Length: 284
Image (cartoon, rainbow, N blue to C red; front, side, top):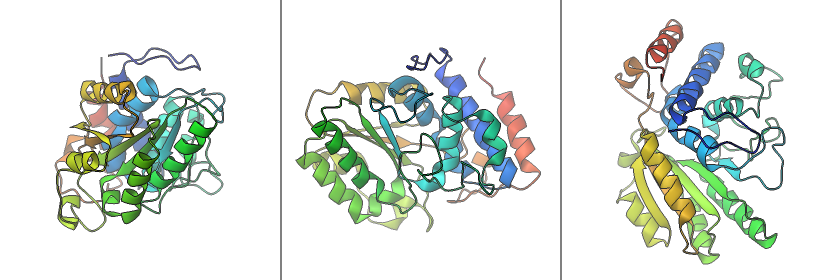
């Protein structure tokens, strides 16, 4: 499957190759600092590839273009993943990769909108992103701007009351220009997400709140593309959510197979091994 060209004229590279490139860039940045939320970055790479190279409208040379779709990173600690896709998209120069997390870098370890082109919000206080996305979507509607707002959030944020207040507001205001993306890797700081609070099928909960809800394998690019297409094609005046079940450390089996926690520790000698393993699985 190939990617749709962006307004900036990016080449028609396959989405599988884009996802592989994102994973590689994230590993290279992690190697610079010897740390980073690499498990999440590897897991969400397929969703980011489809977002930026199939779904979103943007101009790489003009990240503030008023007609762009807005992509909000509610989960600020996933910044390493977003930097990787921003470099892949040509919004950030790739030669800044080695500055990740350094003093005066435009790529701090937690995402900050004031530092980084293409970073729409400063995330990190979890549970706030969807509320900001609701405000942005309302503002775009008032300006009669047809751009869409995408909000990438974590499964742990589903336990925040502010998330559900925002969800109700989105339905009240019939925000059909809002698409929420949930990375469900079943990990948060205190353990498994599914053990943190009483859980019900999440897609049913969103639907009960009035959203159009889908749940798919977030590491199956064809399924991710189909979910994005269905969300964007919906004619009902309601917000949409896609829940993506993802595998932490996807693409690097020796990391996938170790005991996974919210923060995956990678030893100093393992970054090069991870890159070598990833290289073995490079799409043809």
